[in-house]
Length: 368
Figure 1 (tube, rainbow, N blue to C red):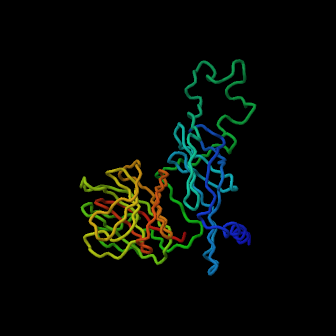
Figure 2 (spheres, rainbow, N blue to C red):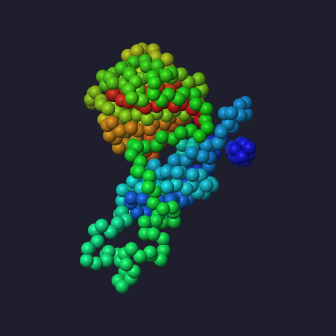
Figure 3 (cartoon, rainbow, N blue to C red):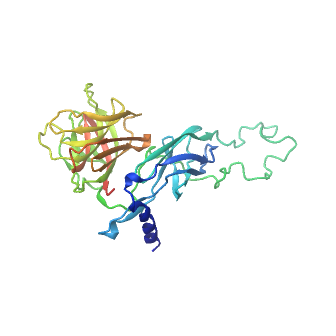
């Protein structure tokens, strides 16, 4: 009942405008503005426009949902326990594994909109454990003629997180510094994890095989290799997590891998089918939107931005298609690109490689 009341409460302001009328997400401050390395720090993130995503399906209540799945990063490291407080505040925890340095803060809301706050948080040097103190005297930071080093101080322990909980003893997160957002309620059209086969994904060209929980494409000598799933909906969100292992080294074209959306039936098997592809180029170190017409050997890049890239490193790639809008995101590097094009109003989702071998560890498609 509580969830139903929350849904109805949030539908009221949204019903008066489309999602394009969502408030602009902005960031103003993070508190505290710093913390020591080697321990977790509780944070309060302040700004405006922190609004959950509401989807109301009046034909089927089971498909209505409210998502408050915000993602926050310091640099390229995802914060833990990100929680919606209200439209002006989120809470989160900076992981203990952050190295000393100055970090930009980035927040991505459930609709995929993002905002950044430069130089928002400083990780200081690790708290001195006393092991390098001189053996014949007190630690360097002890007060002269004051209490002994092991005396209880007059305030909180020196290793307490400022304004937050005690140090987190959980081992540091060793997963790749990327975002793997999970929809908070939307209907999945496709959810393939490749744990026991290819599922509904159908290879159309290339050399595909199921590895240890991944779908692998091993040929780097072919262009526009893809494995596709049908999607009947015109608007949807698709996401994969992929690693590029090698490229052919053609030299005259961008080579890499990506996520195709609104993929058409293949005509000439020598050419990639008509589609839009959120594309990560290994040789050019670009993230871009590629549009294939089905009649071209090589597909032109419609929009692109420079990125950092490493072979055998997993990157999450997300695509959102709605009407004539095609949006591609590389969340770990806070990259978002959009174009407007109505050539392909519908079509499936695909895992795609261009003169590259790559692995994909899931493919998910869900309602926006």
